[in-house]
Image 1 (tube, rainbow, N blue to C red):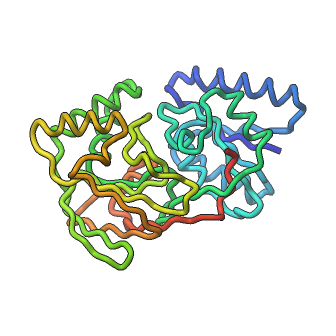
Image 2 (tube, rainbow, N blue to C red):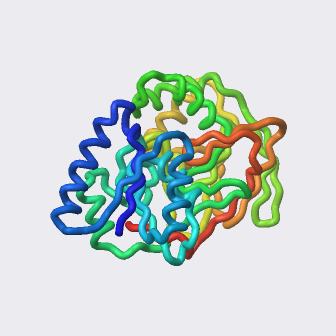
Length: 290
């Protein structure tokens, strides 16, 4: 039995993308006589509630139909990891974590992975109050998301436009980082802890990150001024941001970030105020169809 948690607004508020996707996958499931159920989200965090309830009532495979936001809500409702597997039919705007685990955006191809492959252990990130699958960060990426939220059209181009504006207007954050029993102070435009390698619909903030390597990747970007910001943006678009001399990158299994003052953290693109920025990798626990 496959339980699909469907975000009817994923990929655009008019829901055209979701309707096309559901039509295709339902036809395929019915043709194969595979039992399934569709569960639609109706409000923010509803996917978390649906996931928890379905698992409590015996579900064994929870499939998110949506984007990174839907996946984020689903993983935060998960329990009984030894009994329940997770999957995704990507149809959001960005689908960044789906890309990290090599899930194609074609719904039939994505469904075939679920029908034909055994779920594999896939890392996720655990904080004291929330879980993340893709990237957790503060600084520039939060500023971009706030600009993006105020845009009428939610597209990859819109996100890129917001990123350019933030690059030239956002200031620097002061924070301490504790990892591998070492403490270091940073003045950076970003602090990102990555499990997946990209966000914002394809912006590769940490190309080496791999959600199956049992490691967290930390990325910070020290002070960049003036015209060098243009070069930094071009490097970011090409997936070469870590080649900049201002870039800091290392791997760890646990990391704690202590900001100087009030802060907002984005977890898989969802904003949280002043939550403990303390992250550990969880491996050999979540089984994901990929």
